[in-house]
Image (cartoon, rainbow, N blue to C red; front, side, top):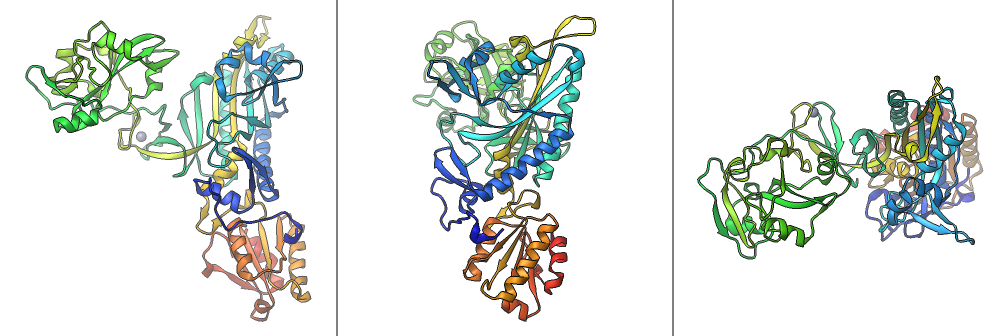
Length: 571
Ligand SMILES: [Zn+2]
């Protein structure tokens, strides 16, 4: 491929709306171009990489025994209504009408569609297990599209769905996908770590996310170097040390005025005591039922853990009227000692044995000090649980070593769904005793376009992208410095043909440009190997071969006839 014949345009300036390196580089290297917020055109270079990522995904899905299908993007609302998700997906789902006023979704995912397909085909246990997948465009009405392809309105996803006869059998399907995912990301040159995840609104039994660790990642991950435990912050647990709050043995409770101080920070400043001496108390509604939740003053409640502990469908902070009714005070002066009305008090396990702590007094602008939780609040043993968001230095629940919080970009997700969709949509089969049973499902996603960007986020330097060969738009660039010199051009031409014959993707930069411009573009786009063919170089010993990832000092100068071999070795 000749540069002058291809649609490549690099940009010197960073796009104004790009907040992270990979977004800047994708636009500047001419991989994508923005059409509108969250909508991008994939230019030829971007398309080449996208297709390579797709191909790796496809090969690994096929190898794991999954079969490729394609389902409509435009899906009738009836399917979504069968599971209640027409409503519960909320404003994230694009909804459109046809000319007959029928409702459709632009699919953000396809559990309903695939369950519809499978219930129409599967009738017997003999047809199971079965895993199908598609690589299809998905839509999401992002309120604030950002980070390029990371959070866009339209994105390419591989979604796979497994169907099994039992929960046990579904474990094998899950593990097959889990292992396939590890291979996909490895082959894309990505260091992606599997992380325990909450199953969220999609429901189900257990799940892992695959994260690419990067400072620009939107998700927090608690990870332990000691034993390899890793979980996203929604899910992450920690071993509480206990009695970490309060000054210790204390005299009777004492009320102190704290006028105007509402937050822990304000009260702690007012009293001159650190936030960790406080117990933060919040009133939640769990499926409409009020519960007071107490955590150490310098900690935040993890609402996902709270929701699971209470086995509630919905958790929300209580409205001011409810808070006043149950505690006798407004938020900011609420505490676990003598609330106005009987209310369940749930404490983080770190508060166990807390003595000499400071809490809200259930009286506006007042706090209580010298609080001994057991003595003054009478908390039951089963009202202690792990309820806070894990932070740096917290103790690993598995091995007891301190954990670190890292940032990650989620590139894949595997879910054991159970019967959530097949129950709702009557996805049944007959057992060998001709008994009717419900199929057990798993669902498995890879953000294909997002994976492409994650590779860049993990592999770039100040000059541009550093592609792994497996997904580079071209593996080799030949910078032809004197295109009008017939002898030089012939050498470049021969090397191009030889490389292509070996199945290597190669582009020849045959533009009439200064060498500096060509080198800058080669580094910006990030081709894994750069070959320089020029009259001056040939006079001085040959052609230059350099790997993008290597330092300048590692450049090799070889005679033209050794170029092919040197490039292949460099790849
Ligand atoms: Zn550990």
